[in-house]
Image (cartoon, rainbow, N blue to C red; front, side, top):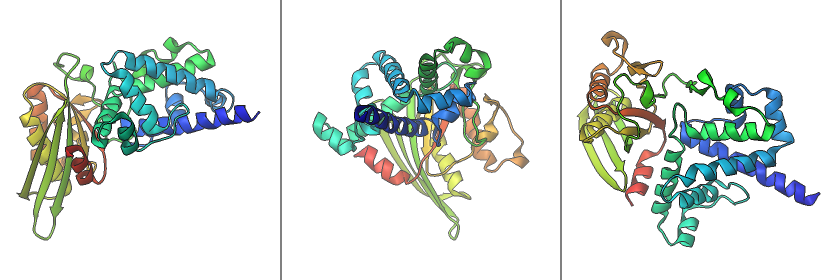
Length: 308
């Protein structure tokens, strides 16, 4: 009996770790139960997973994750970092420093590998692949037909916050070829209302390389305008179409650029920072980038850590 209790205790910790991964993937809190209900599973199904089949559910997720990372170079290492950082499948959650010491790499390298693993879980056909993995694991545990659950419109990811962008490559008119290289923008923007001047700090991470840019004494009207300036600078530096992830210190509201996941034009009188957003829209259309936004906080600290 004690062994069963211990197994289920570990499973509950794994679920907590998985939900932290979902928060990093989606840029907001996302519960596994809500995710499963959103694709058509019943509340009764979810309760069975939570109360009667939790360990089997976690084992099936573990198998799905292992299969997912098999296809990537260095996949075993990425999977191992995920398990240890988020405390999955019987592992205790560890700090980057502790993992770095055991692997004889720096904490910054651990963070880079963690971010790379999270990035791999964001790639998919129409939705984040981590969602597909969890749904597949749930269907296997409940002995449901996964193809029916994941068919058609159920694969479409509908954001529950209109200011967050969910723009997928296959939904862009004149879409670029799949498999775009990925570029991450880390931006800290700030504006002083008394002086009416602002600044931004931008770190562009492209593969193993990064570029750091700081600009100050800029005209603008808000922290948001400074972040938009940083996005423009970063986009103009990219030499080929990329999948761009933007991490910023505030939600900077690019939703006016999209309608149902498509790039579109908008009316000047109804949009704040019209000129800046219009410039971003033009660059996206001309250069074929895809764009997503993940809200973060204390971006200066994150930038400093990534720069080493």
